Length: 130
Image (cartoon, rainbow, N blue to C red; front, side, top):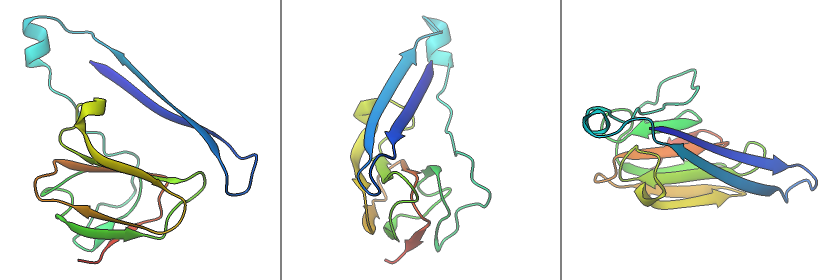
């Protein structure tokens, strides 16, 4: 199964972007092939790995493997807005979103031990604060 998620924005106003999210899914496996196919975890284009102290930038980070559960704080957006999501799985399906948001300024998110992953896009680095 292929999944494409994109955010398109306009920089018409300095801090008031106009954004449209597009989600396209195409099934490529059927029957036994579908059950054998497993979703990939996309960790984005991050130059440094997440550490116990924080999350460096864009990507999808597995809780308990890439990052620890806890409370994280970001100074907010890089350009168009800081998007974050707590995920119950990494399938890319809308139903996997436990909670999400678009922060224009500083943001605080509590990543629970039961979350499977945390996704972040266009946010300044997240620092673990609790």
